[in-house]
Length: 424
Image 1 (spheres, rainbow, N blue to C red):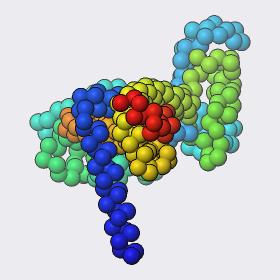
Image 2 (spheres, rainbow, N blue to C red):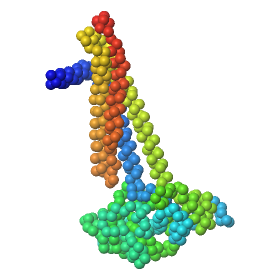
Image 3 (cartoon, rainbow, N blue to C red):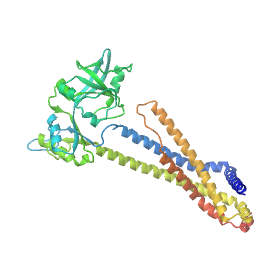
Image 4 (tube, one colour):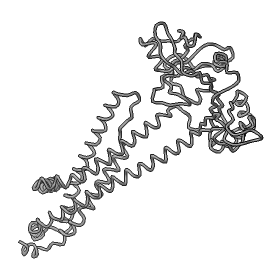
């Protein structure tokens, strides 16, 4: 008897869904036009979420490997009169400022000086390409995480002994070593000075760092750069990171005060002593994309609600057309609950089919965009929708389908057999 009951329930379920399918396909044009509202709403929601996610990852890739608790200090013309000095005074930071910051701002973890060498031509045998020279210290790797394919980064011995060594970017490596060989130990010529390659940093061209794209950089020891460009103790920038658990924004005033005191600059001259806080930039970016995601969900849900209202209206028309059928079913013993559940199920099936089609088409389009852009650019964005978003979208579809069928189902449940026969 158990088997018989089970088979009966299975047959009843199959018959129920066959009836739903027949109802939806009875008027194909109307069903397609009704489902298109749900399809378009889900399609646009998934497409916007995937596009927004890709845009966010593209923005984040600009700071890939760059410490989020970092600030970059640079000298700019003063904008305030201070202790007899007129505004507009040109000044430069020195290597002593590095020691001052380490000594007087205890919350700092790394303090890294940087010297620019400008854009130069780098020569290897008969090949030439352009580069951007930077002089720095081994601590620079703590500011910008290196991705070394070959060799090593600069070390203390390079600094102390003034070794003419360099770490080259990926573009320089590809231009000068097209065969893909290990360049470590080979020499490059820049401004009539030969440098031995000790490492290759393969961070992509899409990543921006303290001053220039990583793929065109050639990093050399600070002491070598000072001698090669006769810069003395001057430095162009100082990059600093905060200790774990501390906020860089809380130390900005102290950093500016230490530099200002040493160079007779007004401590409140924020433009004269530029402190570019990466932490604030990250927060702004996160807030921007949080607002963007909220707008995407509002637009998507609004479009879905409009589609659900359309489904509800069409189901009301369907119930009106099936008044006699529903009356006959009531007359032969169908309960109001079964009638109500039948209409709600029809609404949910229509919504689910249209919504899932929208999800599949949107995901396929996003995948095509990812493949297309992946083949045309380095570090292409990832157009993907995470699993949790898909689950939320599916649950939203089920809920909207149930809500869309609620009013028509209530009307169908209240149809009386006598009134249905009179309607005929």
